Length: 274
Image 1 (cartoon, helix red, strand yellow):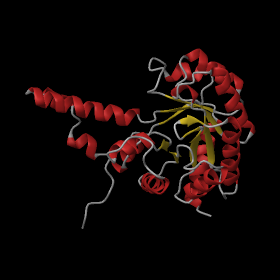
Image 2: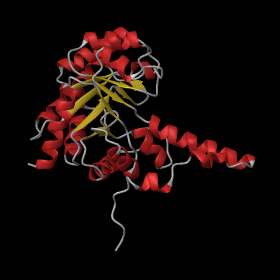
Image 3: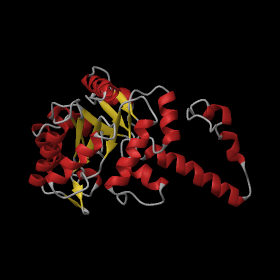
């Protein structure tokens, strides 16, 4: 048994047990991992989109082996618990989802999410549940509490059906998922309805909808965990593109808002080459 991984898993489980809400931001490389760790967050999660952008491709292109290698790099860069965005489990079968979770556990991760969207379509209800069941079984087979998050993608995949989303989340809960997640819920009231409809911790992602929601408001309606998905990467790239556009226009005012070398360097922990 890896004692460090066990300790991280217990910490991660205690965060979900509450009673306080917590934020799990999403770095996309070693540097951003070290910054978020140094700033005092309690856990981190990978972002498939943020990492894809850093590799020069769109979300959904990176394969399982590369994504797990990336996750292992993030794990090695922090002492915090790390969960991973593992998209659809990298396969169309329950067996593929289970194998993905087994491999993920071997990287040092203490949690992961799988979603019910694959091959440009929402996965059939029955198959989606079977994949969660298989992923949960693989998680329970570990010698530490691996937290399995199950995602219903309806609202960001062209099917804004709250009843079907809740039906899926309830089925994922019954299948044993530890955390439930429906990205893109359109309002605080919709978030409240989801939280009241299930008995497991609910994750809400900022950056897709609901930018006006606050941590306090989300806590008040029952949310246990807030993630950021790819929005930190998008914010950073947005600032980068705005600066580049200003350069093209002939001015450099953006430099006044740039973080100093000292401010960034305080979080950089990788030893210098000898």
